[in-house]
Structure formats: structure tokens, C-alpha cells
Length: 262
Image (cartoon, rainbow, N blue to C red):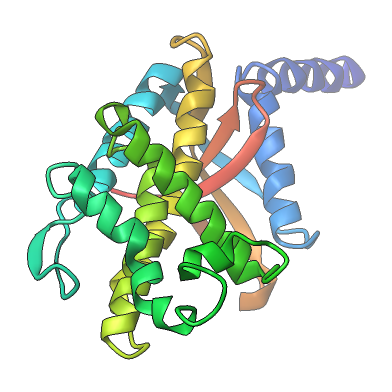
């Protein structure tokens, strides 16, 4: 009778122990916590586990697009005064960048370097530059590419879009040089900041484009709140109660964690 009673208690424990529909995910959290502690056994004990949010493709796209547009607008709203044309304006917009202004920017380095070449066989600095036997340095190659790109913009001026990130990066490169010339090689820090921001926006745009190819109702990740206890060996085994978010991908594997926020 005693053996039967023990067997019955064990069976009930097994049934109720497996009745938690989240037991599989709790085990994954337990393993994640252990690995996060570099394999140290913390005696993880689950207190509460619940799903609190699901991120869909359409929601992520909305957030990313809003972030992209706000950051792009910040660049487009920048005003600056240039000494080469004595005008101030929103320098990354088409309203400022008229066709004539693009030509000025395109020809700027030719104008300021021209005196170096007036007594030789070349008509101008750019004439010398595009004779590739003269200069094959990284600087010369970059400048040739930038000039050719500007030529394509000028040629197709009515069709170019001032929101294009390649255009913004190119025009920022020219601006830095112009400012460097008039500031005696001490250009404003804004050019490097804008250049870095454009590079970040390119990465963000690539992510947006990638998500745009997916079904908007696809799941990107699930978010769960787990409350658990551990014995922290760093605190002499003191028991701690922790609240933490865990992020699961669409296959329900943990891909990250976040601190609890009230």
C-alpha cells in the first residue's frame, strides 16, 4: 500500500509538473540564464512566465520607417553658410542645390587648384586629373568618381531625388572639402557626423527593404516576461528574485533579453 501511494504521488507530480504549457520555454530560459552566467549553476527557479507581446513585420516596418524619416529630416533641415557663394540655406535640399549650384560644387576643386596647372600642357586641374597616368592615388580615384557622379546628377537634374542617400553622401563629401579649404583645413565637425549618420541610414534602409519583401503579418519575435529566483555565487549564494524580458524568434528560440521596465 505504501509503495502504491508513493507511485501515485510520483505520477501526480509528473502530470502536474508537465501541465505548464510554457515548460519548454522555461527550460530554454533556464539554459540561457546558465550560459549567460558562463556556465555557473545559479539554481534557477521559475516563479512566473507569461507572453506579453508579439512583433509583426508590419509593426517593425512602421517603427523603422518613422525612425528613418525623422533622421533623414534632421539632415535635410541643416542650414549652413558657405563662403564660396556667400549664401546660407538648407544645404541638403534641391531648393538650395539648383543646377547652377551643383555645377559650382562640381567645379570647386578645379577652381582652387587650377593655378598649379596653368603653365603646363593641361588646360585645367581636372584635365590633368583625368589623365590617369598622372595620379592613381586613392584621393585621385575618389575625386574622379565624385566628379563623374556629379556630372550624372547635373545631366539628369530634373530627375534626381535629394532624398537619395548616395547623393547626400556625395554632396557631404564635397561640402567638407569646401569648408576645409576656407577654414584652412579645420572643417566643421558636422560633416563627419552627417556622413556617419548617412551610413547608418543606409543600413537601416537595407533592413527596411528586406522586411518589405516579407508578408506583413509574419512574426519577427515574441516577448515574454519571466520572474525567477537564482542563488548568486557572486553574492555568497544570496537568493535573488529577478524580473526580465526574454525575446524569442519566430521559431521560439531565445535571441536576447531586456531588463524589466515598469
